[in-house]
Image (cartoon, rainbow, N blue to C red; front, top):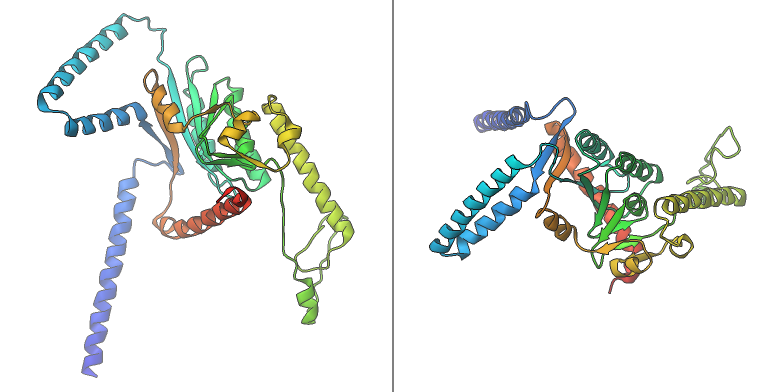
Length: 348
C-alpha cells in the first residue's frame, strides 16, 4: 500500500509537470504571435532580391579568398553609391517596377482559397498596373468545381485591375488547377509539368445490393424530381443515371467555355477530352506559353525589378495547429494520390 501511495504521488507530480509544460508552450506561442497577427491573420512579405543576395554572399565567403572579397566589397559600395545618386537624380514620377509572387498549393477542396483571397486583396491595394506584375506559383491536380471556380475568380480580380498576371507551374496544373492557370496573361511551365485534364469526373459507391442481402431497407424521401439522382444506399435508376450524366456534360461545357474565353489560342476541341500533357507537349497545343521553371523566371526578374513574396497567414490556436496539421496532411496525401492515379499511364 505504501508503494502505491508513493507511486500515486509520483504520478500526480508527473502529470502536473506535463500540464505546466503544455501551458508554458501555449503561452509562448500566444506571446510570440501577439502584435504580429490581427483577429484573423496577417500578411507576410519577403523580399526575394535580398534573400538571393544573402545566399550569394554566404557562398562567396566560403569560396573566395580574402583579397578578392575585399575588392568585391569595395566595388559593391561604389556601385551602391552610384545607384543612390542615380535615384536622387531621377524624376519622382519614375517608379521602380515590382513583382508580387503568390503561392497556391491546391488540394481537393482548394482549401487555400481564403488565404488567396486575402493575399490578392492586399496586393491589389498597392499594385500599379503600369509597372507591376503578379506571379502565381500554382500547384494543383484539381478538385471540387465550385471551389476551383472561386479560386479562378480570385485570379480574375487581378486581370480586372489591369495588372499583368503570370502563372508558373513547376509540377502540375490539371483540371481545376488548369482552370485557374488559364486565367493568366501568360502561363510558364517546367518541361515535365503536367497540364490539362479539361474534363469532369464523379464517382460514388452503391451499397444497395449489400443492404438487400442483409434485409436492410433504406427510405429516401425527396421533393423535386431531380433532388437526388444517384444515391449510395438506394437503388439507382437509368433515369437518375441519365440526369447525373447530363449534369456532368453541362459542367464540362461550362469548363470548356471558360478555357475558350480566357485562352482563345487553344483549340478547345483538341484539348478538352480530359487528357493531360507534359510541359513540352502542352506548349505544342498552346496550353502554355513558355517552358521555364518558376525559379528561373523569378530570379531573372530580380535583376531588374523588386520581387516580393506575399502570403496571408491565418491565425490559428495551438489546438488547431496540433490537430489540423494531421488532417491536412492526410487530405493532401489523398489528393496527390488521386492525381498520381489519373496520370499513372505516363509513369514508367
